[in-house]
Image 1: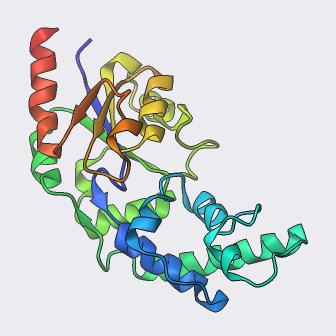
Image 2: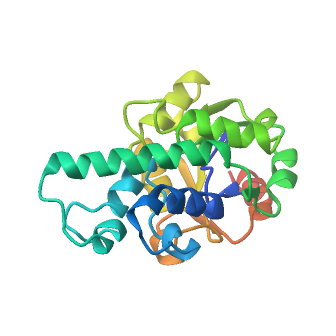
Length: 235
């Protein structure tokens, strides 16, 4: 069957938000006298949504960035949860106000979206839906998409296939009519579980070996259009 829908991941695929996320995380951690995180350190942790990001920073086993910095590991689970809740609230408070300070689309993204007018298009992100829409609106990208799904839109997020299944259902399409484009193993695993074609971009937040199991790899977003065209000609 011909491809009718292209689903994109957001962070690391359409946009580079790493600096704004790093700044928000450092703001959230400031009361705890933690050494500021670098962008590279943040990139290694992001991709699974904000709650999971905070869990990685405030690790229950004492391996997290925050708990390495405090003099006494909190033994009480309630204390640990309180720290996580505080860091998360501070993160969201700052990030929602500074979400577009440095965030920008990757080269070729707008050009590619302009060339994909014959396809339906969706965004599935592990960022909250409201924040995903805020970024897309702020960068004037919303008009390209028929659907936006965030980490809180469905009961499960990527790598679960549920967000992809929701988009397929909403747009009345079958798995073999869709392709998932992303930069992480969560995107590729979700796509495979949903039975859609998968394309991994190599310029995002994950190393090539982590996404090598995708059906196709592309080094630039502009490679997507000829890839789809060539595939259509062969089928």
